[in-house]
Image (cartoon, rainbow, N blue to C red; front, side, top):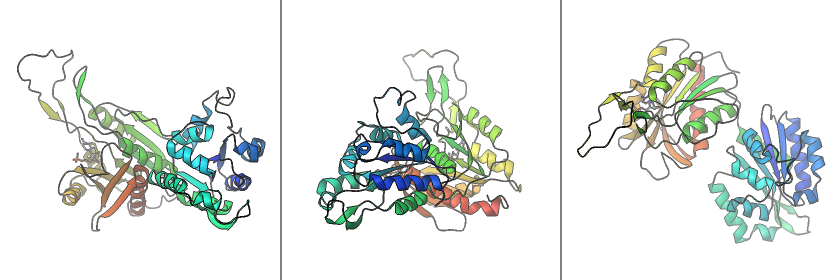
Length: 408
Ligand code: C5P
């Protein structure tokens, strides 16, 4: 199993299966991965932190309140560098605390800060495993996007026989490999736009929309995970820069267009996830406008269409990147998406039904239709990270025809 160029953060819980987690740690390192380990206080009673330190070659986080360990916000640093977070063993107590969103040790605090995929390998006695509380906690974690591996059935440490045995290290490593997915964008350059733009009316007011940037950020993160060099041009959002991604922060559509123009040469894939304002006030006031009794009229002019501009620049050229656009529509979703394929010379349009439950602006989840020329729309639904992977799966499939000979 290869973990080359990947950072796996391992959260070790306090159960007897923690000894098997050492083997999992070894498999990650053997596979060429970077490994960082955080342990709950209970876990350190089963396996010494020194063991994981020796395997990972890095200090192990064990104490949230240790000034030395937390000198550089250890638990947050882990969340920033992680490509995958694996909790093993996931004890009943640890599952409950993860579900509740507690931050009472370095494993749970790191978990709260993780934006990468998360995998848990539950391990406990059969009767505990079958309890309603544990099952409910796990189903909540699943709904939040956690992956689960195991547990298996067999002889347990306490002599009971049944389900509850932690999955074997090889099985957890294989699940980790599946989640990390292919590095099919290695050697590729990907440009992503995200977030809203703000078009000033005066120095304190602007025209904008409620885009949070989460979908575009998820695409940038996923492309990075898949090995691409990623540049993310984003409007004003309250999201931290993804690790390993070059982020260019802009305000207006004009600035976004300029930033894209600067980055666009030699890209393989352009994903335009930004909700660019289509209009801007024609004459923004240099000073704050005073309110008056009557109505005000705001004269709006069009902003540059960034995606269409990129499509036009590369039209017919052999170095044209794969172009992915988004379509947020309230009606005639698929027809509008097909029209956008043509109009903006896109290879793929991600159609988003605005107002549908579990889709669109804000929120962690999305439900979209992927529309391509000459193919039935493909539905993708899940967390924004999962939807991002689905979009990239299709984009990667289109790469060889559009940008041949560049496979890593
Ligand atoms: O035409 P419409 O705004 O529906 O198109 C949406 C798609 O076009 C999105 O991919 C969006 O990022 C992109 N777009 C753009 N520049 C604009 C308007 C939209 O890049 N000014």
